[in-house]
Image (cartoon, rainbow, N blue to C red; front, top):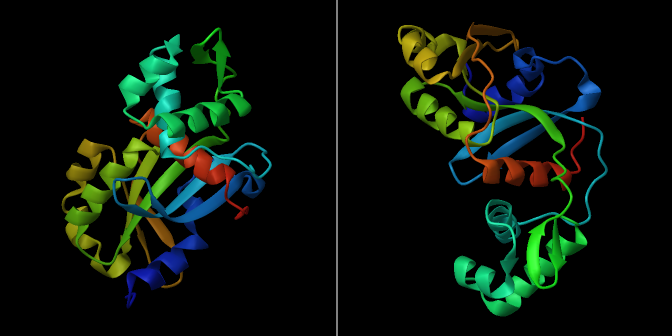
Length: 217
């Protein structure tokens, strides 16, 4: 039995690739404690295409304006000012930044999308690690579906029985269930099907986090 969740997570890091549908370690990064506004995922393992660390990434406000323009193209500055309720000076900086990144273009005072968004994450799996309390773990793992293609609960092997007795709850929500022991051996009890993340904004947020991350594996 693991003494702490931190100990469980540290053991899981060396074995988490067993949850993945891909093999190439050169295309994989592992990110810890990912906060996207819906709790903090203990681990997210992501398959990525080749990329260089970005010097400039979009923050939440940048993404918000990008999403507005994506949904409602041909917006004037005044349109965006009214629709976003962002201060004028800040909005000007955001638009300038997005233009420099080529994600939007200004044609005679009207803003529309520029180049296609450069997503570097091809696939990802969010993991909620728990010693006990499968219900709370399931609730948290479901929230990670907003930005992940698959979401898993991984529990201490010594405490897995209550979760196994309620495996139908994991199946109903399409959340994976696995157990891990002190040797790092993982057993998968339910493998979820892959789904598109629920939130485009959070998907971009995670991509931007990865672009700015220096933790390649």
